Image (cartoon, rainbow over all chains, first blue to last red; front, side, top):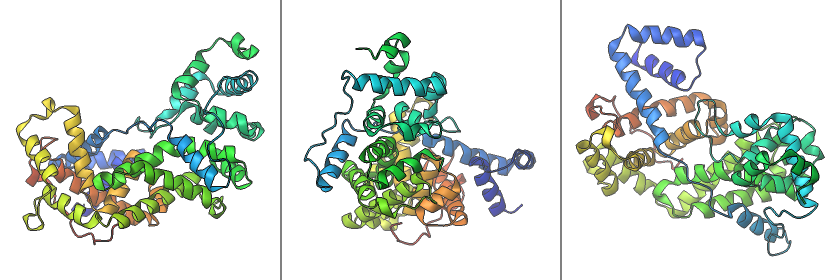
Length: 176
Length: 216
């Protein structure tokens, strides 16, 4: 195997692009070639080290600022009129009911566990509420009206977690 | 159309503003993250650039075709917006050359004081005792010092978990080209971060510095 072959296979191995059989074969080859093993291990460690470069949280109010600009550009009111989340009577009931339906369909673990990629690395800023929308079964999303959709999407992590932990009786009554 | 993002785009294209709102909430993190890492220290206006990305999405919603993944389409708009910012600043070439020469020791091209200090500091500090933020700083400097296309391939692959095909689509490139970029980037990163992982810098493979000056 030429050095270029080794590098190409190592890239495929580190990017999880090998079949299990190919990976086993490559690892077996590496075990018989200590220099290549050392090389591969160094590259693997560096790739893992990149996880130290952490994401920063989304700046507070970023989405609202975007929506204000987009609304203004579209010729709408100068300020984004819709609040990010307001626990208004009726509005709350609808939001809670929709969220509860999502949670009931998917399970709390599914909803809260969706912020992580296949390799266990947190994907950038996966909002649980948005993840829940993302995971919604076909057809359910289309049935949500615009207000409910935007209210759900704009729930913060804390708000959505609170929603998940709320008493089902309270959810059923709308919490008013 | 079973993909939820595509259904949202469809609603958005039909005039439902709430679908755009959901897309903003869903992609604000990935877009900000990509802009921040791709521009690196080149621009202080990360939020402004990210806002511009979403405004472009808003304006060009009708250019989206359902055969593409929405996420890939948004990443591509993000990359193009960043490239415009880099061109606007006119600083990428100088910054990259300075940063790269500091990390990889090409004295003819000048020095990047910040990167030099970080690498020098690493030589004196045992890796186990190195503070997390110091390691993070070195990783950031190493990524920042990569040629632009290698940097972008690493960011999309490592931090956004995109498969080769999606990285290629976001970069308007090909899968073999992406694999090649990642291979060269790994070699460069290994060299740049040798001190952090406790490996002599000269043990790393030859560094590729041959990428042309195209800011991409």
